[in-house]
Amino acid sequence: MLDWSLKWAEKEPNNASAWGSIGIAYYQLERYLDAVEYYQKSLKINPDNANIWHALGRTYNKLKRYPDAAEAYQKSLKISPDDTEILYNLGLSYFLSGNTKEAMNVIEKLRNLDAEKANILSNYFNSIPKYKTNIETDNNISSAIKIKGF
Image 1 (cartoon, rainbow, N blue to C red):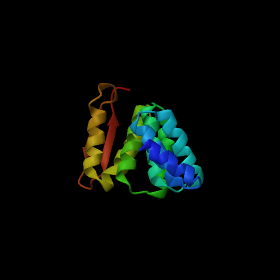
Image 2 (cartoon, helix red, strand yellow; image 1 turned 30 degrees about the vertical axis):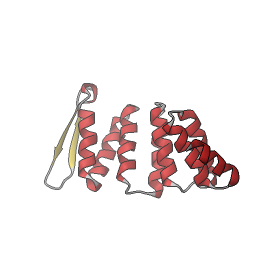
Image 3 (cartoon, rainbow, N blue to C red; image 1 turned 60 degrees about the vertical axis):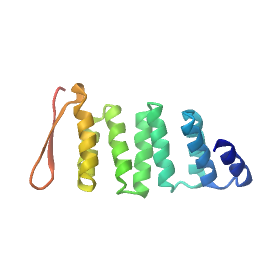
């Protein structure tokens, strides 16, 4: 895929999708810094591509650059505000960066769009004793979140 994508970008240097496909190829090869470079090239041409912002966020997560990942996910959500996969990944980035307050806010928003994904994310947080949370849901599907252990 990488060779094909490189040739495509060479033939069409102003095609954001070509540069994005190089980023995807590098991501698949676990060459995350290279993936970031090509996602950024793609976004310079087309900054309104939610999928590439999302891919950039996933790549930053792999690099443990969680604040950068959260920023990329936020930009993706401005374009696709109800994308639950992006919301899930944003919540995960907040959590991994230690920003549990924002992570809990994302869980609440996600709960209104996809309760199953919200529960998966919440259960992930609950599985780590340092960040143990107690989530109680009332009849209106809103939640009261109490962080314990801080």
